[in-house]
Image (cartoon, rainbow, N blue to C red; front, side, top):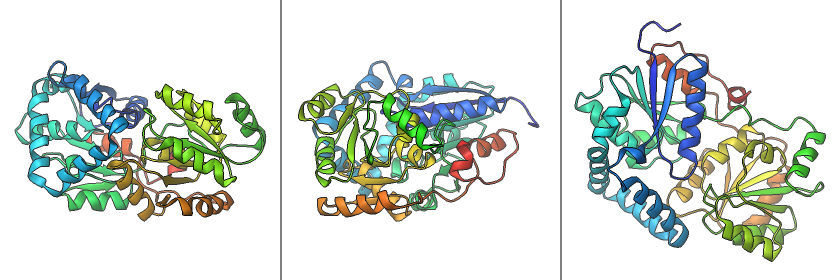
Length: 372
């Protein structure tokens, strides 16, 4: 029972890929189920007209055409902190008016699932434009300095490894929480269910399946990863190409495993797989763990892909395969394992946020209990 009003919680995400929006959508769902008036806004819509579309388009183009440049930019911002601070300040300034408008006066808490949104909300909080708690939910296992904004009251991290990184970047209050993964992500219940899911997606009924994922945009060295997995003979690569129709057509023409386009029901596809091979370390990795499917990182995207792979490896959650020569032995060991590494039990993110907004927290739960 909440002890005070208002009970509205505003979540600010960004439509760059699917990870930020996926976490925000699940958070809103949980908060609404708990009785809060929760809503989500796209940070790109809060920027001056045309700027959000330009930001999304340039980011997508960079990852598709010159991913090395994205990695170079993130490293530069991390090494030269004044430049990161300048980017944060400019983003906050550009979005200040519309951010203030969508948050409104009758709100109990505000949550960000996107670093530049955190910068804008932190600035409002610091300057007195918000008098309620501001929370940043860190969607990645690695934490870039842009995620840590002065004025934010609480940073929620997915693992102690991510929490330690946030603290090194200056976050004052950091707590570890459970992932924002939907209830549809669960382990397969029987061999018959796995066969049904495989038939549904046109996958082979027999033998191991390696699900190759590269985010909603299907970017990175995906073709090479699928081809090299097939060459090991250990598993059939099933590549989720997302919105990248050209990638799907090339893989299909080459006969490299199974090439899928956009998949509306990823939880069902995960239940058909034996291992997930990822290159970005985003939401799908957490969904796979919740589904009882082991994860490995391979041919990772420069920038956040590499740093997430390093953090997942450090946390013991997913082996980072840095060289092709290690692909076959790691795949063989992963396919032979009977257990899937999971993050340590932690309070659910929505319960922690609800407590700040006047609700009551629950006891820590494991990732499987969170999505059950």
